Length: 96
Image 1: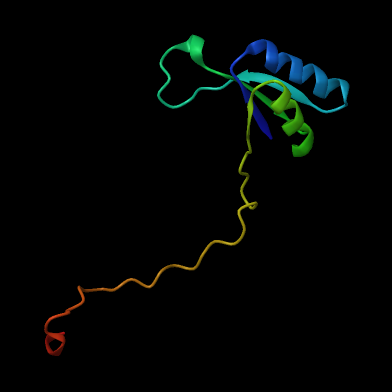
Image 2 (image 1 turned 180 degrees about the vertical axis):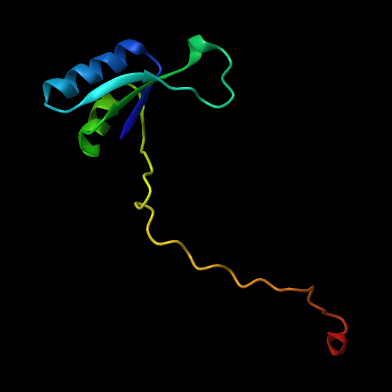
């Protein structure tokens, strides 16, 4: 799980709380797409804490959750679509 905060102090407070509760947690800088200014990048807290616990901390420190999608958690892949090999003739069905 990953929680995103715009304030470094909020991110550090969440890490301290999670570590005090016995979970592993650390802070790293999160680069968002399109952000050029290094000072505007938010802070990400990565942890092994349960999602409900992290959600409570995120709500109290004005952040948001960003769940990591790990391979295998998405379920079985969908079967391939059956696509036509040629255009469908609508006006002259006798030609196609």
